[in-house]
Image 1 (cartoon, rainbow, N blue to C red):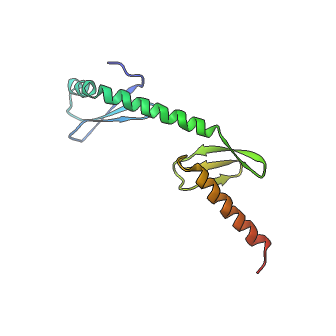
Image 2: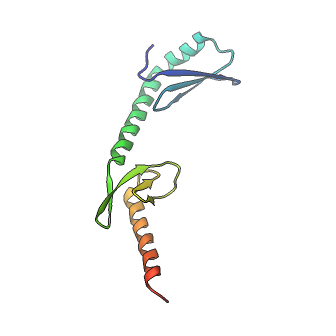
Image 3: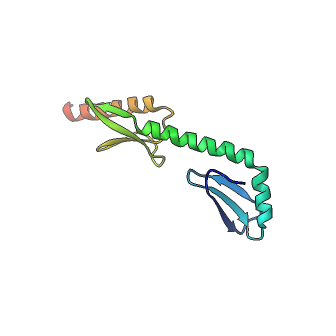
Length: 127
């Protein structure tokens, strides 16, 4: 059986075999005593699921690349949008916008602009 992505077997002290699909490879986590035949049998049984999961991962990567190619205009200048899953909300880093996900990008931009506007007003208006 041949997959589009390279496979890597990680043996550890565990009782079951699991399959993890990443953008770079297929990781098979197997018990120390699992035979190659048993691992191949699990891969054969799960082949349809593996192929479906690879398609999902590749689609997700393609979507992220498409989003990363978009710009948000701020004060008439375009700034690229990049996905960074380690942050929780839209952030501006000197030359680009960082977002955690693109599911509600418009709302994130609106909240960011409102917060920025309030900070600007606080600096300009004295109470």
